[in-house]
Length: 466
Image (cartoon, rainbow, N blue to C red; front, side):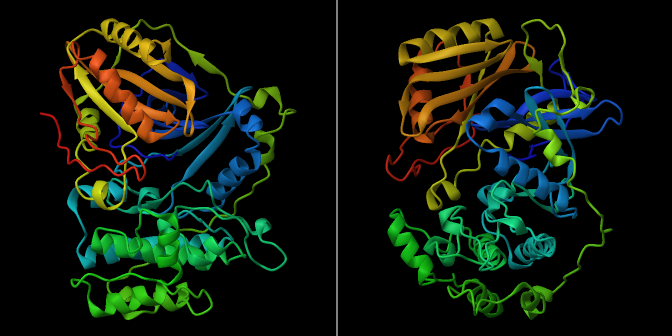
């Protein structure tokens, strides 16, 4: 979960206030957290707030991971890293207030526009290395660097996010190495997969090399539907650069994607590389002394009551939140981003949407009628629905968060996001649900027409409904 959004708004809406923040629509949702758009009522600043349920955190023994993420975000203050403004807690929830990033994912930019020109790829790569180098100087390794975790600010600048897998110095064992296998397979360094201990900084740099390849090629250097074959390719650094790579770029990538961490290029050496240095302007910013003394208090049962925030919900009628034109346009950026990565990277969408000329109450009623026979329970909260599967699937119970948003008079947009369970099962559920909703759907965003059940690869090309 990250503080990403297709666009910002001057209006949060939603009728709920937490401390000095007015909460708005949901930007993203996962098994343990959701991210909401919010507005600081004192300053008018738009932010993203990551909301964690304390009970779930305790139940799944995730306290250390969440504390690590918060500590990491507080430690790193850099223009190319998502900013953590503050952390609040109520009796039941933890609220992490983050910088709102409005340019979307770098992943989406490549998916919609194709591979980047070398100069543009170098610009993003320089910002990435600058941010990663800063993290390492603060004793932090990211461990899950990939385009999906690289966001773009309003000015087009890179922002590194998602420190949920980051490692702090105290996690390093006596041998000076980390011993947790994590990350995304295609981007993971060979020494991480071997599970014999690894240098987190060197593993991060390998991931940066894969990202550079993706930026310039438009596809992954290491890709295979069979996981063991994928690992073999990674162990042997078995990849081919496309012909449009310059010779200097090829040489640098070879030095970064060296399967032997002992001989792999280091960041100080990388920064002196001629290809990297072209047009390089390191950012200027002030170093800040950061204390982590307040982090433990957020998770403490003995936390002083006067330090707790209260969630205040205002009375509101059953009517969808109205989206302004800017929000609608920004949402539509996600409608047609599948032509490249859907085929080459096995991306399967975790959300979809449709529009309807029916009222919010009619839409809710139809969804309830259609979901019930499919074996799904529907819970309502105004114009938001939580659709939960009664039977457990490949990855637990499928859960779908649904929200109705007014985009024009007598026209509503319905967003469906998978927030639990298997993505392929989400696609199957939506196809079956659509049959029961055919009378109310005006226009629907296409979802994969042909899915490979083993690899999760969408084979059909889709376009934006108009």
